[in-house]
Image (cartoon, rainbow, N blue to C red):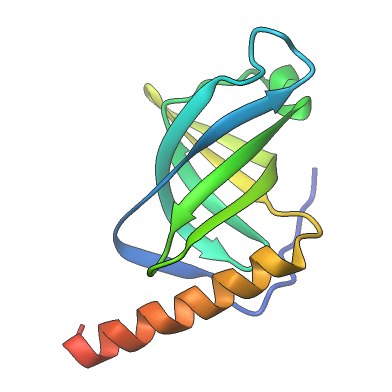
Length: 124
């Protein structure tokens, strides 16, 4: 699968930003399963996360991940689909796509702006 990002920016964090949520799926054993991880980088339409949630290739195509995370002060809630996966021992990295959620995209941009202003004022 060839996937080319068409976004203006992708923001990587110096500290850990936690994300958590539940798995939404037609597969009964997976539906409602809680998961949590760390956001490695983020853009308005997606993010790269690292988690101990293990999903097979077939399962990844049939699930959506509910997301809850805080970049600055507001909690952002959304849904994502998994675009790619990489295994790192007992951890897994997933590329998540936040499809057609303009309110979430706008909130991500505003929270990143506010976070960056704080970082600049602190001298980071």
